[in-house]
Length: 167
Image (tube, rainbow, N blue to C red; front, side):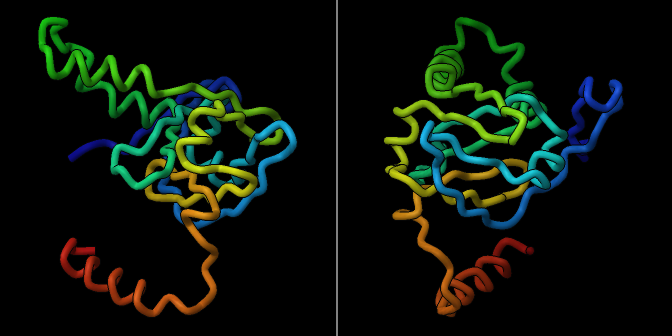
């Protein structure tokens, strides 16, 4: 069984904070500098990082994935001992390294993601953040419309998937 990820920060006097699941939705408008705000409770649940890792989602869904350093490090750990001659893994790491950006959080929990990643998700003015466990997704509002109370079909699909996945 895997341990719950933790992070050590100077803000907590060096004590380890557990990384907790992030769930929910937060809609934000990009500010004039094209930044969006990560909700404070999400930052808390991520262990109060000063930076986050942002990358195109590997699920091919047209969104960005945002990880705390502790969660990203946990995912990268299995590649630590990869031989440089292992072509498939080396190529994967090279391509991943090319796509991932590290963004600093300012004092108001805003981050500025580079324009090429915002263009990739079709971000114009409105960002939709969706908590999906130990990371969150960033969508353009055009690709992830607002919930309006008429999601019966979506709920049916979700219920069926929950049964299949044992949720």
